[in-house]
Length: 542
Image: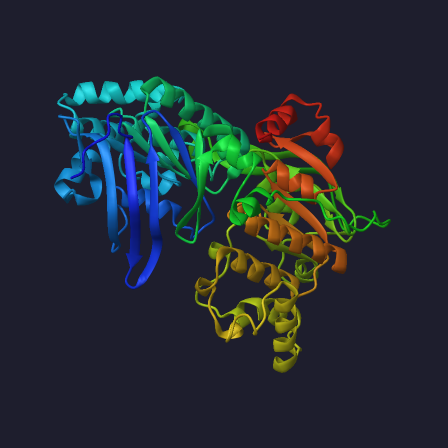
């Protein structure tokens, strides 16, 4: 072992290489983290950033890991050890106590069979010599620190009984249970609304200062990095291509890939068509959506109450235009989209091309062809058992049953080419399955599936929130081109202010089922009048 420097870094990672079989996915990564420092590792999906972090604790199954990861202060004696040389028993002592992890999706990381309090207390009991009662009280105190309301009651809740933001706070409480020296935060805000994202970042920053711990944050969002980190390391295809102080890298990026990431902010189509006159393709007047909920006590045996998810919403969607609907989770925007698609019964008047939904398959068939949808997660919305030809051509089988098979295949191929998927790029394209494509390519498949029946309106429910920033920009550019060429109208559901600013012409802001502000998108975003809109816009400023 070489002589240790007088002031060694907390983590000194040297020439890390990670491979699966013959494929090397992390190639010679070296970086250092000082005590109390906030370092962000950024890159697109597949860049190797998450595998780099998880390999430190050997949390990547079936991976071959080489290199050195010197960590200062391991164990009770505080010696400097190479984490990659520790056995499983020694690593169990390090995980949670010296190095803790916050995972991207708390719903899958938390055990659904145990309460939040039990799961936090278990970590405390594992690493500290305390009684069950002391561990439980410490767990409640941690929930207080992370800002969860009614912590004593929430400690008795199961993960599914908490909101997304509360589950992420519970994950942070669990990670901080033993006051680790290093916190690995793997995309800790990706699944959250913009305001919750800001709250979680502020919370992490406050706890980092309070506990004096270092944070290694994994993210693909450079705007988040600007707000949170001290230094940034940029990864591309398993290689560390640039590193430095955040302000320096953002002001003067040296590598082409870093410049590409920084230039990936959504932009408005400069060739967008001018407004067109005509009857709205979709119109809602006084739209209400109610869900039944059980009444408490004996009354619940005989009747149900109701919850108003959408309350008296009015909107119009002209030909060739985009209406943006923005709001946090629970604001009612996705429920409004379901009603617009005829998938959720509603009250009031909701019409498509002048006709109301009848909620009967045969009577609604013509409207179903006119209104198609692109969902948030293409991997969930595309059947894994169907080929590309079957997926994209399914709508033609329903709406054009008289079409000859050869003509149907030709229509499928033309639509795929229109969204940028061709046989030249992807041999055997029509016989492939969704898992053989990347996230952005799958979203193009979902778009082709919607476009093949030649609709007039597309309902876009968070169409890019699951994509990397560069892929997001490509998909938004594709949607803008298709709108210009086909004269499509979009009902865009999102919580991303940047996306709505680039895509929408008119905007409505929803909160608790109601529209609190509406108007031309530039006017609403540049001069918001309602406090809720002001909060959304200010939370999105990077």
